[in-house]
Amino acid sequence: MTSAIISCSVCLLELEEHMVALCNACGQAYHLNQRNDRPGTDCGEVWVNEEHLALEFACNTCLHPPVEETLSAVLDTAEAAALAGLSEAALQAAADAGLVRSRRTSSGIYLFERGDVIAFARGRP
Ligand SMILES: [Zn+2]
Ligand SMILES: [Zn+2]
Figure 1 (cartoon, rainbow, N blue to C red):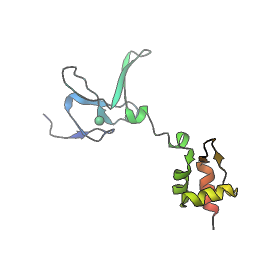
Figure 2 (cartoon, rainbow, N blue to C red):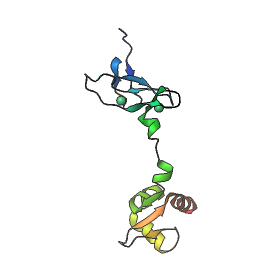
Figure 3 (cartoon, protein in one colour):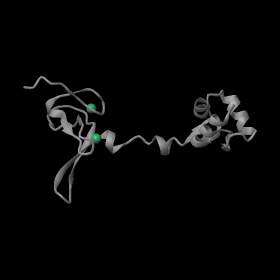
Figure 4 (cartoon, rainbow, N blue to C red):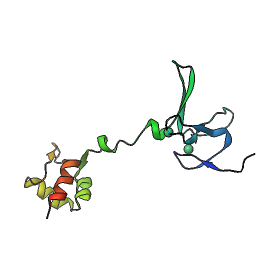
């Protein structure tokens, strides 16, 4: 019996002994239910590496890394306005004036690229 409480690196909740797995990528502990007779949620996966016939462990943090740079490169008006520190109306006015690059969808929604908004916000007096 160990009294040390380990917490899951993914969900930050306490790990019970039958739930502990160590991620091969980051070395942190995460939830992996290794007992079919007990309920539990998994915060990662385990699979057999066919080349080495060894078990491989990976936590959800490593399996699904944040995709900040790629997925959220395109911002809608609310996100872009928050990033630029402007109201949505002011940002749309700037876009209409060509001060910041934007794209208008057929439904009239303004879309901005993160880099353009940052450059615009920096260049603003
Ligand atoms: Zn967890
Ligand atoms: Zn990991």
